Length: 272
Image 1 (tube, rainbow, N blue to C red):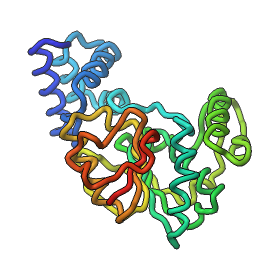
Image 2 (image 1 turned 90 degrees about the vertical axis):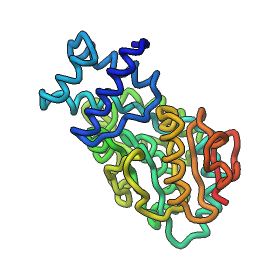
Image 3 (image 1 turned 60 degrees about the vertical axis):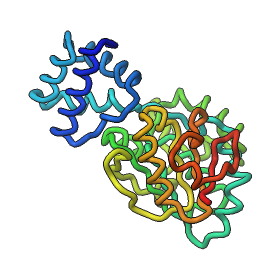
Image 4 (image 1 turned 135 degrees about the horizontal axis):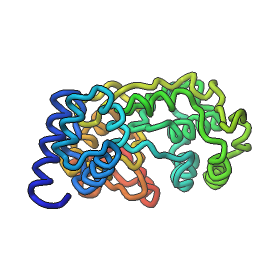
């Protein structure tokens, strides 16, 4: 799917999705979007993107499944442990100076990282005075995030990352194993508000001290990256923190001057 015709068909399909369902994928990275649409064509048995567009527009059951294919529903707890160690050791001392905290986890997917953050805040004595907004565009991802139930066979890897991130207990202290699943303590979610929010179309909804948006910007083109980072700039209070993924940077953003590098290796920035 790399010729001009395919590019045109992709644009038409994404425009149709926007007009019909109000999900805006028009500024997602083209190569990544082409791969996911190829997968969708195979999944729905379509020989062309035009055929996929017809299915999406005329078969009510297709779009919810397509949405899951177009959004990345893969995450891990304490992914990139050095990021969480830097949060704990370098950012938390600043956060402890606030009487109350608002935190935004943008693109929370199925919730692994927001649960990681809740555990870290609990261990640092900050969870009770924190309000965490966990947002995503995918309702199925938000449903799983709200439930806090993950496959039990993933816990060994999560536990290893938790220890590497400076965890102060055992990850098993935070979940109950049942029927092949790990059910995380609902007390971790008592201060988390799970909400639908699109970085492509929605606006800022709160002033916050910390934003994490990790491994999301890599799926956007430059224009959408700038829009999202502009939202983060506007949402953060002065001297607030922004954490990105290991392969993401503000260096080429239109808003780079609004931030300083706080922990360069861990991609943590501070608003000027």
